[in-house]
Amino acid sequence: MHKRRMLICATMAVFAFSGKVSAEEVFKIGSSVGLTGYAAVVDRAWRDGLAVAAEALNEKGGLLGKKIQVITEDNHSQPQDAVVGYRKMISSDEVMLFNSGCVSAGNFAAASFVMQAKLPMYLCSILPQRENEQVWAFSFLAPPKFEIESRYRYLKEKTGIRKIGLLYDPTPYALMMKGLGEELAKDFGLEIVAQETYKADDADMTVQIGRINAAGGGAVVKIGQGGSTVTAAKNIKQLGLDKMLLLSSNDDGSIFSQAGEVLGDRFLFVAPPVQLPKQLQPGPSKDAVDAFLKYWKPKYPDRDPANSARAWDSMMVLAKAVEIASSTEGKAIRDATEKVPAYTGAYATFNFSDKQHVGITENPFLIGKFANGELVIAE
Image (cartoon, rainbow, N blue to C red; front, side):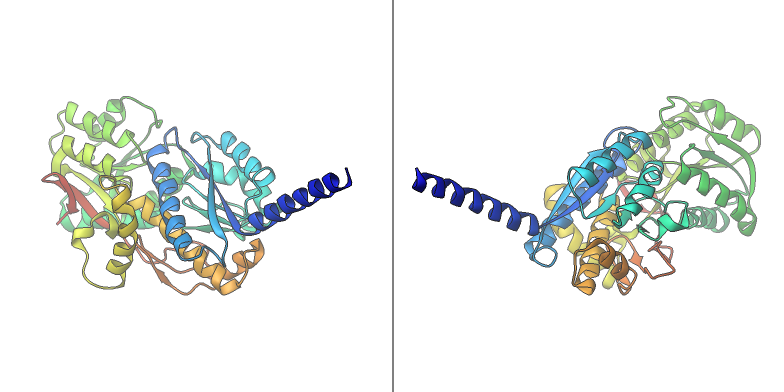
C-alpha cells in the first residue's frame, strides 16, 4: 500500500510539473474577430494572417522560446458579443496579449477591462476613444484620412469630376472617415453634394445612389467594407448611370473583383502595395511582401493577401517588441512596442512611439482597378 501511494504521488507530481512547463512554454494571444456578420471577409483574413505568422515565428523558436498559440473568439461583428469573447479569453484562456480584428465598436467596448488587466491590444481597427485606454492599444490600421486623400487626389488629378456623394455605414470607423471626407473635400477642390447612409446588410441602395445622382454627384465615395460595395456597384449599373464612378474603401480583393466585374474601370478602390504585387519594385517593401507571400501563397493561393499581410506585420512587430523587452510580460511588451524601430512590413511601414500608437504614418495606398481578370494600378 505504501509503495502504491508513493507511485501515485510521484505520478501526480510528474503531471503537475509537466503542466507547469507546458504553460510556461506557450504564449497565448487572444483575438476577437468577426468571423460572421459584416466584418467576416476582412476578419477571417486577419485570423488567417495571424495563423501563418505564428507558424513562421514558431519555426524560429516562438517568442523567447515560447510557442505562440492564437485563440480566436467570433464576435459575430457585434460589440456585445465581442465583450463576452474578450472576458472569456482573459478569465478562462488567460491570454497574454490581444491581437484583434477590425470590429471597432467591439474593441472599444472591451478596452476598459482589457486595460484593467494590463494587457496590450494590437488592433486591426482604430484606437479606442479614451486616452487612458489608448495607452494600452496599438493600431495597425492606416489613418482613415489616407484612404480619403488617395481617392480625392485621384479625382482631382485624373478626372474632371468635382461634385461627389458620400455613401457610408454607421460604424465608428465609417463615421470618422465621413467626417474627414467633409473636412478634406475643399483641399482637393471637391464639393460634397449629398451624404447618404446605409446598413451593412442592405440589399438595395438605389434610393441613396439616386439622390447622389440627382444632386449632381459624378462619383460615389463609399465608406464601409464588405458585400455592400458589390451591391452599390450593381445598383449604379441598374440605374443606368453610365458615367458615375464608384470609389471604394480598402477591402478584400474578392470584393474588388466582384464590383469590378459589374462596373469595369468605373470601379476604383484603395489598395496597399501587397494587393498589387506585380507593381512592386525591388527594395525593402518587396522583400517584406515576398517573405509574407512565401507562407501565405502555399496555403491560400487564390485568396487576397492584403488584410492578412497587415495581421502578419502586427505579429512581426510583436516579435521585435518581445526581443527588445526580453520579456513576455504585458506591460513590458507594451513599453517595448513604443520602442520598435521603423518596420517595413508587407502592408506598410510602421512607426510606433510613446506619442504615436497608430503605426502607419506614411500613406501606403495606391488606387486600383479591375482589368483583364486581375487587380492593377489605375493610371
